[in-house]
Structures are given as structure tokens and as C-alpha cells.
Image (cartoon, rainbow, N blue to C red; front, side, top):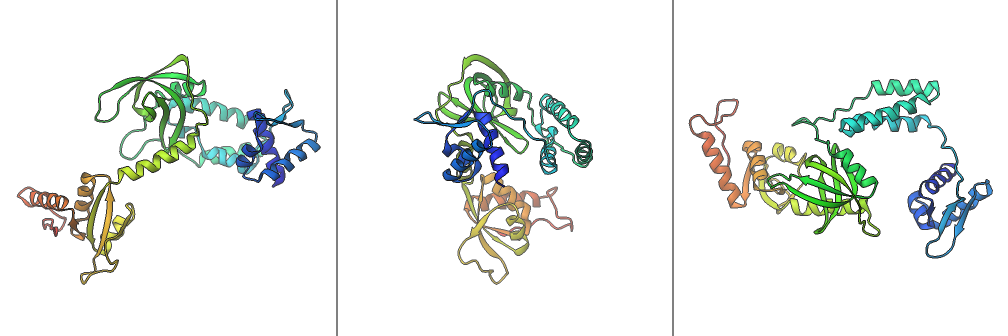
Length: 329
């Protein structure tokens, strides 16, 4: 609706001070011509908005002018409550968010306040994963402070399988992926991404952060995750699968036909599957049991054969019916 868009434009100008027409068009997902019409409509309604010409120009509100943000409607309230503070993971951040949410709820009209209380009783966030504890986010408030105040950050970082390192970085932004938080920072070696739970110690420094001109956090994250996907899945294996094994494998790992995508006389299909490494490929093929045959690479086929032979020895693994595992290699 146009009224919602005009309000959004007004709040954007209040938050950012000055924005170009192209910036407003991108944020509002409209054309540049629509932005100009919206600015004229705001002016006609008595909002003191004006345009500044030149390279540093754009649309701006009269200095000192502010409007009150309207109250939440029911849909906005439900969306806000679905992101419960417990999802933050860190106890201090969660408690601060809970206090802010309590103040918000206290200001709501009675019907909305009752609806909010009812919804919160029907939603629970468990920040702990099935296979291990929650992320250790003790460093998150410190990292957040450095990011928000554009200050350099000194960290001690422990990556898996590597020695601890101490370095000073320019924190550029935080990214939450599920329950995991990442710090994107500028280092002497270029842009790097650090998992916050692996930061053992952090200290905000007095020196200001050097932020690259035009840095786009969302764009960097998308590009880096796409690059990660391209480089992670390097280990390719060709497998001959029965229908049940093919369905199980396809539910969590992408694959493509290896040759004609037609079942053979035994009803099996040939698929080329990408794994992170040989260890993952070995784990998966062993887990699929007799429903899989490793065609290539030969090294994986030999490792599967060796594992099965070890299980078949006295004291080795057996299936539930008492028979020993049998794989075709």
C-alpha cells in the first residue's frame, strides 16, 4: 500500500539522515520515478522533506523534525515475538532483549498485550543443538560493541586443528547463520570470517576501525558462502544404488546421473555424488549398507572393502538379523 511505503520512506530518512533517490528506490523496491512521486506526496502532506543537488545530494528531512512511530499492529507483533530473545544464545544479550520486550509489551493496548502473552506461552526456543551444547557466545557482546562503535578489535582465536593466534582486526559486521554467529573483519591478509564461539578472548581498542569504502556485508557473505560451497564439495564418488538407498541419499545430499539415468537389470541406478572429503564418503557408503556399490574412485572402494573385512572378523559388527555386513566392491 502507498501509505505503508510513504511511512517506510519517512522512517528511512529519519534513520539515515540523507539518502539518494536510488538508495530509497532499492530499499523500497520501487522505481526512481515512484520515489520522486512519494517525496512530493510527503511534502504535500506537510512533511518538511527537500532535495539537495550535487554529488553529495539526496533527499533529506528538515533538521530537528521527527515523527512518532505508530503502534504495532497484530501481524507486526506476531512477527516480532517469533524472534524470541532466547534465540540470541548469549545470556547477557538475551536478558537485555527480554527487558526491551517487556517495556514494549507494557506499552501495548490490553488486547494486543494479552495476545502477545498468549503467543509467548506457545513458542519455545531451544538454542542447544541435538549433538552438543549451545554456541559459546561469551565474546559476542564485546565483538558487538566493537562493530557498533567502529573500533579495532584484539582477539585470541582458536580454529580447529590449529594453534591459537592473536591478532588485531577491523570488525566490519556480524552475521547470524542459524544459532551460529560470525564476525566479518578486515585483516592485513584481506577480509576474513571468524566464528564468534571460537574467539577465546576479545578486547575493544581505542583506535578507529578502517572500513573499506562501499563495503556490503550481505553481498560479501553471499559471495563467500557460494565460494565455500564450490570448494568444500571436492570429493566425487560414483555409486550404484538400489531405490531405497538412492532415496535416503537424495534426502540430504545432491547427486547427478553418472551415464544413463535408467535402472539396470537389478533395479540399481548410477549416481555421481559430491562429498566434503573421503572420510565423509566412507561414512555414508558404510551407512547405506548393501544398498550401495562403490564404482569409483578405487581408493574409496578399497577402504570400504577393508572396513567391511574388519567388521566381519570375530568380534566385528553384525546386522540385526545376525549376518555380517556384505558390500559389493
